[in-house]
Image (cartoon, rainbow, N blue to C red; front, side, top):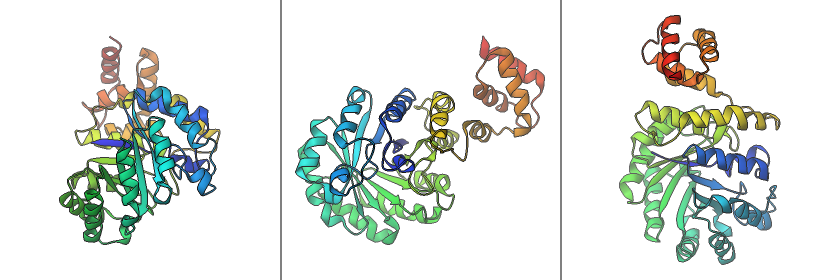
Length: 331
């Protein structure tokens, strides 16, 4: 399963239209060190929005692109671009600055307006991605037909966007299955959490054949937020996938760097890493102190200890079992 992390684009909505330079660099490094290397980046409204739409962010497009330069050989970093901003000037700028992809965003049903933009992106040697925003306004059949047309113009990947967080898992299954059957290019899913269904919808999309899931650190995104990156990895690992990502490093980064930094901006994730690891491991919170005390006593990673012990006993882990596993982790 591929994860397309949108924190540094859609997540920028939590502070306005984008993140300042210090948070941007922090997240780029945290993602890359955790082997999350497909990253959508920049102004929350995409390339050209600063100038054309007055969607000012802490940095201009050029400043964001230049800030990403040291990381372009470590990750596939690209940008969103609204369909009306797919001008030759904007696309040439992104290509010249080394962006690996541009993802055109247009409302479902408006695909005809994207043909020239797709062709320009391909002409400049970048991967052409596409977001079917408000995908639910068309039927699953009609959305799949639109995807076929977009594919015929050279598109490389397409994403169904549940922009209002309104879709149910059964709907996600239907839309994803029909689109996967209709096109040869990879199909992704981007879900918002307005109904609390971002995880359930991600599982539905995965089972229906989606090749990628959009996500954001701490669930950061517009409105009720996106599927949290850390939660996506936890759930996919439970399903036997996502082993390529460094889950524990990501949680450490969130605990030690990102969560404290975002708290100063008034943002706190609804599910913190400690609670996430309890769910991932199947460990009841009543046992928290036993694990915390042992991790401190033996100087081992608390989250790894919880997971190792819970793999043996989720019902009533003993002090002795916890100590044995702590000593094994320390060895």
